[in-house]
Length: 235
Length: 282
Image (cartoon, chains in turn red, cyan):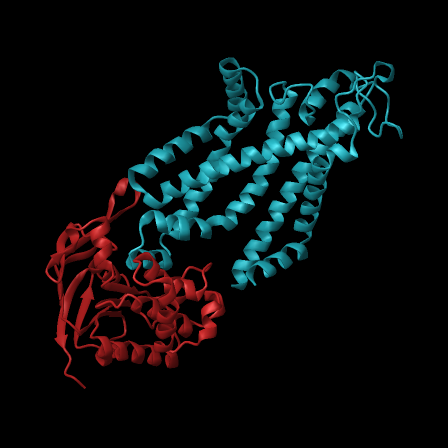
């Protein structure tokens, strides 16, 4: 379903771009329908950059990303916007993922409004449905992000990502900022939605044990390259 | 909720309350000028250069005009001109700064170099030159002063806005917006700029003090608001020849310039504390 071929990204920093950091160095990656691929690596290994390249949040210097056979690197503007409905991001820090000035309700409703997917009258029903599915209460909707706990925020972020019925989600260390008990419930929630909707995940983490639990396949990344691939037997 | 907490923060802060008090006082002066003051243009040659008394609270000037009335009406002039300048330069500066910071690349280079160029020229000297040019080109008008000050003043907004936006656009919620499929202009106007407004409000308040100083300086040099319209800087200029015989002509306008600048500076400093503390609480 999603395929990255020969991806490469170099960041230039320092005075006059003199210093070059190769974040992703010729990586190819393939993710099938309904599959979870874990991307494991230490910080700075380029795993987040790779995730963002697959979502076209960062344009690669070299290589191509195919989604259902369409080359995303060739798309611009409106065409890219249409593809974005099908792929979403759940970022690392839930406290940073929502606009601090917006109520939870508006944040979750935003993707629906941007893509004009539902009428005003249906919007509220859809949001209540989403909120129930992720285990938040109705009263959370009128609050601001700083009035919610980390776990609650991550649920709101998941609700927002699910609002568009995506087929592929990049989970960029979705549990690393949460405490242990919340971690488990968030992972369970993600797994539940995968079974329900057949979503594919790229699960970025630095925790190999967690990767073993959630993933069908594990890729290990170091200094921008994938150094090991292994298939997990279903447990 | 948020607004109420913010309001309470303002009034619990001494600097804020004091500054706001001074500003409200001067704003009320300007607002109520027709009620609380007499005619600032009425000359009376038999009562020239009279010292402060019950009849003329701040004395009279060389044409026998009531200094108190001129001060009160002058508040209106100063505040209106300063507010116009601030609003225009804030809009221009914030937009350009946000665009430079958000889009980066060549756009940032061009806007950045323009900002640097303007920063390199001493502000007041540039203002004086501009007013001169505008006067020759378009004749004397209050818009000369407004435009001349805006030309140098937008830069500080642009510079601050650019650096705020640079850090905001790396925040995860902005990156998430892109993943949701939001367009660049939508993100900039709905998410980035609203989140940058806190520091901008502080800057605008502190900047009002500077603007008032600039207007008064231009007025003092005879380049600002033209007589007979009452304006504090210009009143000092007119009174400077009588500084030994009638010091009230220069003292009172000077006092009110200082007071209003102080008011805005206090409020700005206080807001900075309140907004900074609010961040920590969150």
